[in-house]
Image (cartoon, rainbow, N blue to C red; front, top):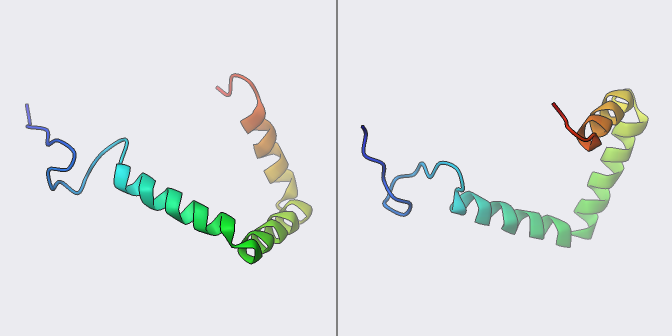
Length: 71
């Protein structure tokens, strides 16, 4: 069996539960949420997509995601 390296051992591949990636994601998500202009632009783009030709597909995807037992 191959030896598995422990997290923080210098191995860049942390596998599941990558704490470095989680920290970066959280920092970026917080920065995005604090930027009201960026949030406003993203909301407008989402509204345009839902009201445009992607609307039907997006609505179906939302229903699928909200359904119980999504198998």
